[in-house]
Length: 478
Ligand SMILES: [Zn+2]
Image 1 (cartoon, rainbow, N blue to C red):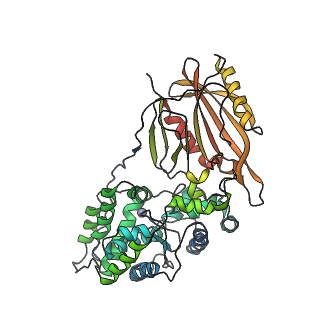
Image 2: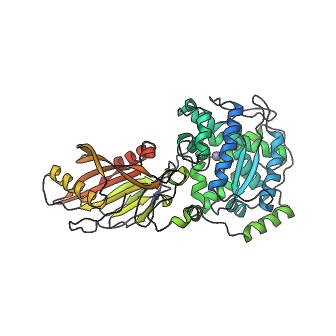
Image 3: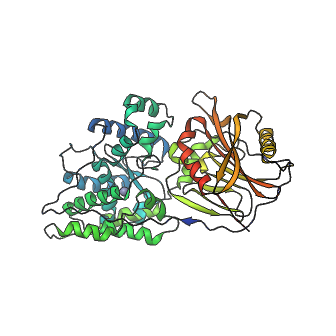
């Protein structure tokens, strides 16, 4: 959708904003009593062991295309692999055979890590920079291996109905580089869990597995909890993403202590080795890019042409977290991994994932504007608005007729539209775009409207997030 302006006079819609990060609710961890390390039982799923390995391999290729993965011979990668391989022998090989774990480092500065089904584990350079010692890093790796061991992603994909689509299609989708449902699944399994979001139960299970692997390898399992605690305390620019991908199950440290208490006491190390120090120095000397920069690099040459390069689902799909926009005219929740890309708390705003827009076009996101119609009747006002929007987007078509909608007690109008996306398909043809327009009366003679934008093929995946935004929309009563 091209960003448009109205012929009607507009005033900025007024005041102050504080973005609130939603605070996770604590949940009680689950403990298993045992004398020798007893691992939790992996979840069952419709994907076989071999299929999960295959998904992991395809996902690995896709991650390499979409993220700045360091080469295997990079000293940071070698070190992470060395730590991971210390843990691997302790992964039980029953009830399922052990997955072929592999270890990679991504040149991103955000503190994050993720794993794919079937074995690939990824740690960002920012995570190595943030670790105080080898045990903390081993804890992050062990936790990610825990997700793979427990088959969390595959189990959840099963629950969400992706298994029926079949693996042949997965291959086609991933191979074509198109972010179709399963392609997204493989990537979002860890990278940006939108479809698949780890639950707090998943988190406590991954901690459980990670802590046992650490115990067996001789690392102090509390280092795992220490690292998460450190991220929480840091908060700010680096903590939240890892913590929103891996929500706090509550009392990590106590839960881990309770697991370890069941086991024979042993000597631990935090692994403050000369080797860790030298690898940490190498990491500190690196200049990893932000996810946003990595996304922009991918968009590369096409910046400024008004075209949005094909984006990966992970870059645009809501991550399940929410922020609140406290606008002077309204409050609204929006996906935590999206941004206010234009405007502010007192003006029109555009909320979108960075990767979903160029200077003058928006492929994914929401536009919120004020509109002052000539007419007083809501029906006529809606038609004015529709024609106004179509002036900037001539190929836009209204689907059906506009309908009444009630949002938090306010009666408005809504309509679906279809047009041309600024994103091209693999053959260079523009994708079809779907738009959802919602208009609400605000003050006498003034309306506020929202347009939700996505390529047609992705609209249904974004619809729940758009609906949540609409449901959360509350006009201020001044
Ligand atoms: Zn986790």
